[in-house]
Amino acid sequence: MKYFCGKSKIQSFFKESDNTLATSIKKAEILFAAAIAEHKISMRAMDHISDVVKHAFPDSAIAQGFCCKRTKTASLTYNGLAPVMKEQLISSMKRCVSAAGRPVFSIIIDESTDVSCTKVLACVYPYFFYI
Image (cartoon, rainbow, N blue to C red; front, side):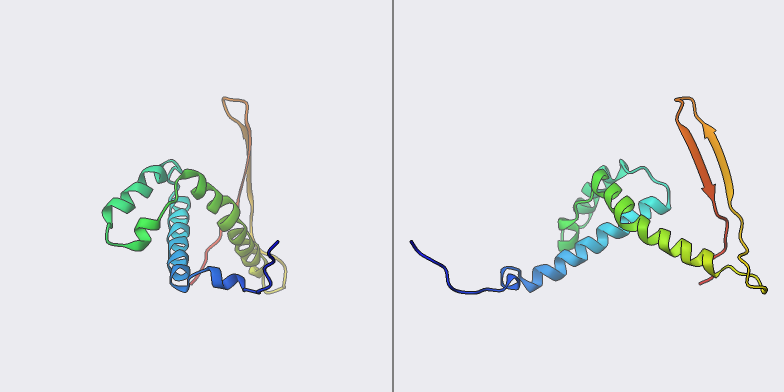
């Protein structure tokens, strides 16, 4: 029997140059997912957009590594972007206080049932965000 006595760090298995490329690809995928969610575009559009990005920019390593179809876009939106946006919304709601120190905001609630008997509860929080 042969035993391996040497120690190696996990970082030795990864290349530094690939790490920056992988990070850039992830950033591009997150930006596309955020744009899809912001502009209310169907997630199915990413099945086509992902291929268009590769064909439109054949000289870009980031574009060639870009692979973000509908399931990955949905996962990035629901599991990655939504919790962050929820926390930002809650913190901005907490900052909306009057001179007396009481919270000042409104919430609009609308409950309905659509044709397929699916119950929907829409909660809207209208506010202005100054940059």
